[in-house]
Image (cartoon, rainbow, N blue to C red; front, top):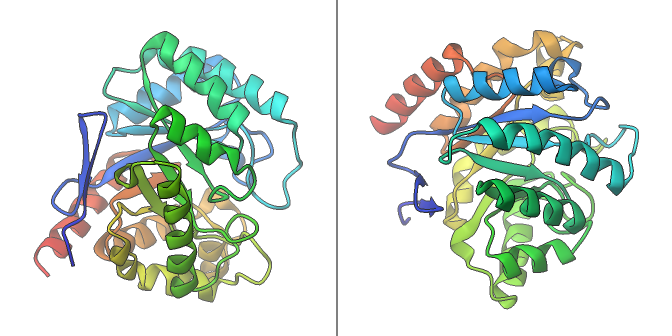
Length: 287
């Protein structure tokens, strides 16, 4: 298979022969499953932003709406208000080489985020867990504005695909849809959608998807994995509290990198993660 390589905004290189990219989660949603990750005031947002950058995050993922299926729903207006408040803080303190990922399924939210980022001359990408199923016009938006996009594997609702084969099939359909809109396929990052997004997605499915992560290479796109403190870890270790799932998260992260992940989306950007990434990269490199 071809070597996987992509370059975003002329300064962020992602690929097989480049260091794993760390994406730090800036969670703006009190409805989140992991309360310890929520930054709900200016002081917390600023501290977390500086801390993640200091510990090696190249991308910061801002999410103003909990995407867990059981979470309390909010309006698009509330999502925009949360995103706007946080971006006005974050954009003032991040260097120009830090990319903001806008975790949203809605064109209106992405549009407002682009307006704010332009004001501060910062770069953004869009992170859509619905794979353009919730608001198809979001695909038109990224094409019109030439923005990179992270697509999470989904067919009808976020994260509802159970096997690697169905994930690859749906990704191919969405990639082709974007191509027909004139979108540059080199700006796509793929996320297989780990986690219990639907009831039928038990831990066994997540484990198989991680174990088969290298099969996604057939799509020739950078692979992002978001496994931080998720329910399959709790199920295996019999740990109900997300706050206690760090060791399991780090173990799964190492394996995901060995199997080909290029980007790790995580709540925990620290020295432990840096060391685990380095070891996993070296083992993969020498395999």
